[in-house]
Structures are given as structure tokens and as C-alpha cells.
Length: 467
Image (cartoon, rainbow, N blue to C red):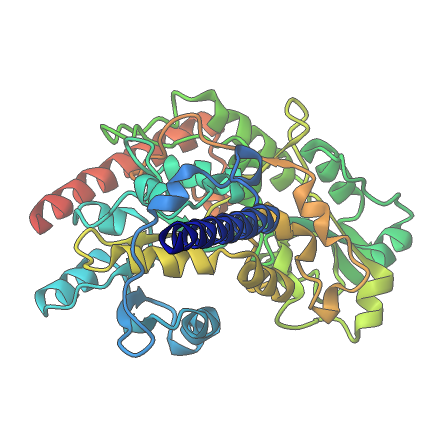
């Protein structure tokens, strides 16, 4: 009987123990489920709408550590002060990476000198054009690197991405845009009122702008006025090139270097327009040629860089700017009323000889981050490369208080339908020569073509000699 009683006691203890284990198991399972639900609520499942994909799981390993950071070198042409303004905060935000400047003109010869000395920068700023590094074979395309870093290329201004792709024979993303420069039409209400002319509109064509210019080029009260100044650097400055930039055409064949300006009717169309401007009596006076008449209150309008007033105000105070000066989109061609000039940029290139491509891309990714681009946009250090921060452009500059700076975004930038030709730089459409000579358009284009052909041929020889 004692044995039987002992057996029942053991059985009872066993049942109680099992019950306790099951209860604990259920409790742990319940806690685990609660934690999983909580985790899902805090970190939703990735989907396409949040722009996070399965590639996030396979992001490249982070290079360097805070105690042993990797060094990313940048071949930079604009000096240490500008470099620090652009990269110091980025350096502080990336504890695993040290960013160091390598002073370099970033032309072909200076880069080759760097390479010969054993210096291989990770990032290159080809300030003088992509042609300066293209033949060196140092460009590392970024499309796949962007994917591996889960970087959304569509977050960048599509016009700048298109511009960079048009520099490459295969249409690859060969760099990240460092910024851009916008162009605007500024006008002085005081001069319009003096001549009794209605203010310009934001849908003005070039023909309409030149008609206004003709009405306000002349004298009032012993002072000579210019109706429209093109460029802020004189009448053959950047503003005079804007109508051509709106057509986005190549002067030369990108493959052969053939000069196309006598074949493509866009150049005749452009020069016919400019002839109308130069035929206005007074626009080629010595005073007008020296430029900067708008800042002297002697030009009613100017087409120049939007950041014209960033580094100073030529007028006596900000109140004059606010009350008397206004800005609009640049004039357009009548047959393409919504198209503005091409947006250019310097692509920040990662070198294919870099041993730290992932770290270099992390630097560029931070450069085009919303916080960094917001800072750049507010200070107008350059035009923002993110459409997301466009409304911040110029908001930190007192000279632009009350101005419609966002008017620069009202036109769609022109884009190249084909690859940009790197031979274009050797064909000089010298508008000063055109304006001050009695050559007709056909003769001017023929002479320019011949000069361009000689320059292209010489450039080809130089390029061959550097290989």
C-alpha cells in the first residue's frame, strides 16, 4: 500500500509540473506575439510606397569605425574655405568616415600629375568639364552603387539627372549633381514707370522682351537707359546664350566632332532672334558693352543668374530691391512657351580606382540629403538638386525678401534628346563679332564653322598625344 500511495504522489507531482511548464510556455508565446505586433507597428513591413525595398537587407557593410575611420579624399578645385563650407558638417555626421580635400585644378593634366605621385582621390569634381577626365578612364558609373545603397535617384531633380546622363555615351549616371545655377529676368519698376511702359509678365516671349527693350533704350533727363541687359556681364554674357540653351542643341556631332551649326536650323533661328536685339539702337554702345547697367539703375531689365544679389546689393538698400525690383522667369520661344534653359551641373564623380567606393557614395548621399540641400538652398550657395527643398531657395538671403524666387521653377528645363557633344567647347559663337560686323547669318555661321573645325582637329591631336 505504501508503494501505491507513493506512486500516486509521484504521478500527482508530475501532472502539476507539466501544467506549470505549459502555462509558462503559453505566457512566453503570448509575450513574443505581443513584441512582434509592437515591432510591426513601430517598423511597418517595407513596401514600394515607402520606397524601401528588399535591397535594404543587403546594404553594403559600413566602412570604418568611429575609432578607426576610413578616409575619403576629394579632388577639389575651389579652395579650402569652400570645401569646408560644403563638407565639414557632412564629415561630422559620418563618424566612420574622414573627408579630406586634395587641392586639384581637376583638369586632365593636373589629375595625371596626382595619379603619377601616387594620389588617387576617391571623389573628383571635374569643374572644367567631364571631357577633362573622360579620356583618363577614371569614371565609375553609379547606377548599381545607388541600388546597393538603397538610394532613390528619382529624389534628385530629373533635369539634372538627365543632364548628367546626356554626358555619357551609354546614358549612365556618371556622377551625383553638386548643384545648379538658375537664371531669371529682373526688372526695375522705376524705369518702366519713367518710360510709361507696362511691366513684363511671366509668360513673355523673347520677341516681346525685345519689343519692350526697344521702347526703353534711349535718354530721359540726360541719362542713357538700356531696355534689356543680357547677362550682367555685358551684352554677350550669359543672358545672351539663354535662348540657345532653351533649344538644347549640339554644335557638333558627339562621335565624329563634325561641326553642325550650318546644318541645324536651330542656330539660324537663334541668330535671327539675336539680330533683332542687336538692331536696337544703343544696345552696343560703349557704356552698354561694359555691362552692369542694371545695378546702376540704367537698365530696365536684365537676364542673369538668379543669385545675382547674393553677394551684394548694388542699390542703396534692401527696401529699394523689395519695392522697385521684381523677378520673373526668363523669356521663352513662342513655339515652346513652357520650356526654359537647360539646367547644367558639375557631376561629383567617384573614381574607379577608389578603394572606398561605398564610403565615397555615403559622402555623396549625405551631400544630397534633405538637411544639407536645405542649407544650400536657403543660402543660395547653389541651386538645390532636390525638388523637395525647392521652396527654400533663397529664403535665408535678406536681399530676396519679398521676391518670388520660386518663379525659377515655373518653366520646365530643356533637355538634350541625344548625348551632349564634348566637342562643342571648341566652337565659339562669338556674338560680339556677329553684333559688331556687317556679316549676314550664313556668312557668320560659315566662318564660325571653319574656325571650329580647325579647333576640333587640334584638340583631337592633343588628346591623342596625352594617351
